[in-house]
Image (tube, rainbow over all chains, first blue to last red; front, top):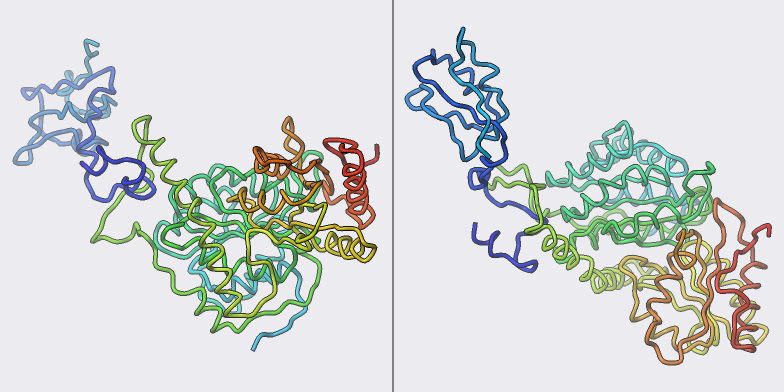
Length: 99
Length: 395
């Protein structure tokens, strides 16, 4: 990261290249959203739909089970809540952030 | 041994592309470029090149495919004209910003409206600040040789900047000339194998190209891009000299050609095919004892400010010929650059701008002669009749 963050126009990698993989993890996008998902483990049936649909890999699992949400990277798109099949109450609901 | 062939400018460039044998070509037809790519498509169909030819649905797609292919590590080319170049506009900046050494012949043509398919320089002048190197050609031979040299210039590790090689629509693209086609094996040795600076298809070295760049680093990346084109003048000369040594050609291999300028009192500055006619006028005036000269600019981007100023400061009058208009600007784009080059030069020559040839309007010897007559008058009276004049205009 140092070569990017402390680079000058003379030392930055050519053409704005990011010369390694997985760097999106270093970029905090959690502040972008207006709504945030709230996970209710007592309702969850562990179908993992939310994990499949999340475009930002922000559904955290342990041992194949959903355990929490990665608020550092979740952009609040709401797909997890939309796809959650539990009825009558969803295991993930979108709540407006206290901005 | 070189072969002497009767070729149109478009065919000559297609021959250059055949000898370069690019990995990928993405193309969309547009007059007057169409016959260039049609000829190259013949070479593909006949198995004379190994190129993967991608026929796309627009020029925006053509340049996008070129960017993707070149970023993947393949030597990639396309060609276009006029509105096709205009449709590529967005992606031209991307090719330059990604530092992709794309080479693209552009057959200069007027832009609509009114609709017109004939030659002028409006199209590439509209792309003059896109970050590409612009090399102008006077005739089919130069278009052929410039295309070959452009690969070496673009791919130089300190340059890594896309190059457009221009040739005047119809006058060069469709006029048949005797063209010297050099031995393919020697051309391929000169051009060399493409060694990409980076490739997106290397699983052992994953990387991202084109990530978001806000106010923290966008400026730094754009200034960094400037380093490539600023380094190129040296490379353009080196490549030109090596080309001349290797093939013994007699085209222009400098940033501009100074024709009979050593003892000239007045000079016309010109781009492209009109240089041929201007040279005839200069010779004729010289035979009558008039100290006329010509500067033919070959590299419009990067513009050779310092060298040009050193050449022009010796004359008393300069007439800059522009085959396009910079609406709301000071005449045409070449004029603007030359004026800028001469700022701060002591006893700078008198200068005027002549717009000519828009939409293929003929430019004849008498029109060029009239420019020299104006210069003689300017030297005698200390003033040009007009700052910006129009040649062969119904006025």
